[in-house]
Length: 44
Image 1 (spheres, helix red, strand yellow):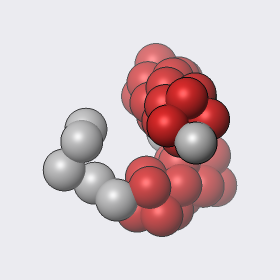
Image 2: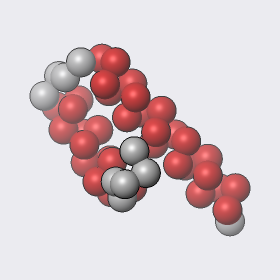
Image 3: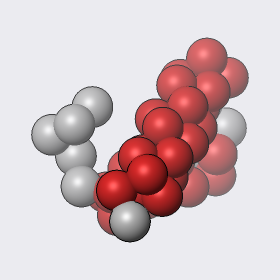
């Protein structure tokens, strides 16, 4: 999912939750957001 910007990823997550999409899909988005947050903190 590296081809999405962080903001695009957050938007996709919020839309997925709002539309009540598949739990597994939402979970994958959450994991990717968490992974990027960890990476950001490590890079600082």
